[in-house]
Amino acid sequence: MQQNETEVGEAFKEAFDTGLVKREDLFISTKLWNSDHGHVVEACKDSLKKLQLDYLDFYLVHFPVSTRHTGVFTTDSSLGEDGVLGIDTTISLETTWHAMEGLVSSGLVRSIGISNYDIFLNRDCLAYSKIKPDVNQIKTHSTAKQKSITPNKFLTCN
Image (cartoon, rainbow, N blue to C red):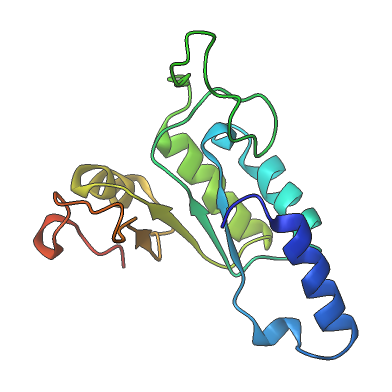
């Protein structure tokens, strides 16, 4: 599910306040949206505010492409007037990744990862990263099979 951080944050607050669960007993993750590659810290802090948390256990680059930024966590505004996705070629995946590493260094995030990186992007990330991705999440389910991704066609990150 996407775009539900505010509601999830309210549930976390209630669960923590009533003693139902302790923060340290949960592993909480969220994603950096495609339009936020150039605004990593701002996007993470926005997620933390919505989730009512001080830190994330895991933060993931949602997809290996940066789209036009029109505000933090906007999912539908990256389309141009012609209906074509507005790709932002001024922000490299390396720049995005180094900003993700900064989140770990600052304590906002405990671990970081990537999503839907093919073997070539994965290798690139491993080459330029100081902090290696803990996960490469691959989207695959009954309605979105990725036939090109098989166990021998991607690398593990760590």
